[in-house]
Length: 323
View 1: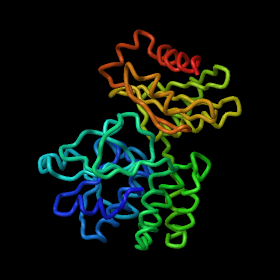
View 2: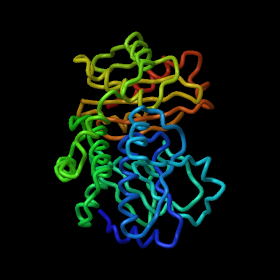
View 3: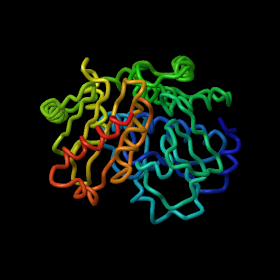
View 4: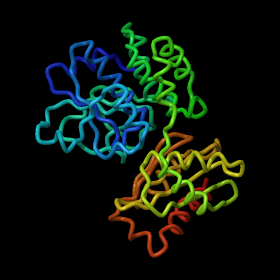
């Protein structure tokens, strides 16, 4: 990892914004919040920001539980300047899921693979189950003990992004879970983990079940209506739970385009690479070996032809046939 003092020096004397990806999930929110509090300990004030929607119940619960303020880009853009410092957290510039804000992206802290290399003045991009793990390590190495809210948020983000330590876990994730737990609020953590599904989500589950198609060990399902990003990801986890499925691909047809999520339990099929290759000529996608996300903007959907579901299936199966 890079030296935290370098990041502090980069930010001192400037307005600072900690930017997550456009649809911040618990890991992104926890990581941004933890970094915000850590920078404050060094005298650097920062605003949390994003562009898109907070479209998952668990994200809204986090904001309420910790009284967090995350500003939308729309509310900030009039005041932002090109010299303002931006720290990308749980995302990378040109990753396909993050808006290019006014300001200078001087730093990036992320746990995803890099598909579009960029130069940052401060960079900490390492493979881990959660970005919250990296932020937790900053606390551990700095000697600054996270307060109960920060420890609880980071632990929740870590557990959510690793599916309760069953997905993409590294030794550092386990180490940081042990570091955070004595400092967290167990009751608040348990409350955050309960009741994270809304009644309207059941319709999406029904559509995913009704439309699933199996191709050997590949499960593909298209939901013919709008689903939040987080729900599309949950549906891909749901499809992957089938004993017949080792790779799950879920697409949601929305007004703004087509959102896709991939999960893989096959060590020979990298979910992020699969998305990147399948969508390279019509959209964007990427992610980890076991999980990834992608998007086809509405301006490109017409290129899929009269049968977009068939074309999406063809794009992925063509790549898989080459693996």
